[in-house]
Amino acid sequence: MGPLSGVKIVELAGIGPGPMAAMLLADMGAEVLRIDRVEPADLGVKKPLKYNLLARNRKAIALDLKDPASVRLVLDLVAGADALLEGFRPGVTERLGLGPDACLARNPKLVYGRITGWGQTGPLAHAAGHDVNYISLSGALHAIGGNGQPPAIPLALLGDMSGGAYMALGVVAAILEARGSGQGQVVDAAISDSTAHLATSFYALVQGGQWKLERGTNVLDTGAPWYNCYECADGGWISVGPIEARFYAQLLKRLEIDPATLGAQYDTASWSQSREVLERVFRSKTRDAWCALLEGTDVCFAPVLTFTEAPEHAHMKARGTFVEVDGIVQPAPAPRFSRTRSATPTGPQEPVTKGLARVLAGWLPAEALKSLP
Image (cartoon, rainbow, N blue to C red; front, side, top):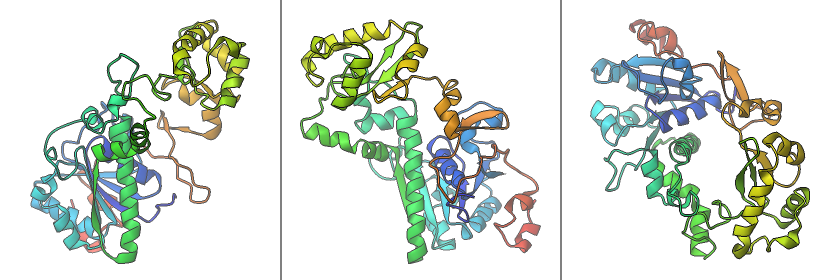
């Protein structure tokens, strides 16, 4: 099931963006085989394995990639695959004998996907780093946060997870091209590149004089009082974002605020006063009360939900945005396809060290399966 059904991908297990890319591809129907270390890589979540959701939807085997026999097995798997994914530092797979040259020699149509923080080239290519560093260099982190406040780190969503999504997109694009040209290629996915790419429109706004570099002074960075989050009487939070004048007018009407008492919507000189008014009004009712009044209207409103609350929201339930697998509530595959729908995810599997023939059936010829442990 899924639009990528029939696509075969070998994943050299890693952490963060690599597993994210593999999960996306597997969610869309690709047959992804995860090759873990004999001592499994830490995917960022403590055991038990069922909580390592980025490892869902695929079978796994464990190999010692320093063992020549294991390297030969990976190359045999690569020979019948559409793509290989890896997230090591530049040069690591080459030293293992599994670099692009070795793999493309076995399969000239192979797409070799590489995801790193800094990319395969450049002065920082071999330096260690993590999400916060990559989004810092892209310019994006500097813009996130309130006025007079330090940059606000947006979890690992903007860098690692979006980097994995870029990797998945690049791999799919290269597979499509290879089916026409008969030639594979390397996809160099750098998190610092992808984060910068996500910020394309903001680079344009800055150069066009429509975005200030000072945090918390623009429409989309908490500067505008009508595009912000507010605390309610019960300590809950809500968000409003009526950028358009007609939606802003509806918000003020429902809040029973006379527009004449506030400055023009885009008059930055009046934003401080408007914020004080909105803070006072929103603190007058509970979050649920504001939901009853504003949710589903055109004022651009939503409650700020926690990770435990979001799956229980009526809209999320109606759309099936979350599913429960083996007792673990998790986001369902996205996006959605009208005809080639993605299957309900399967839980993460422990990597197999024995009985490899059962796992690798369909990947290798029958004769080759007989020699496996």
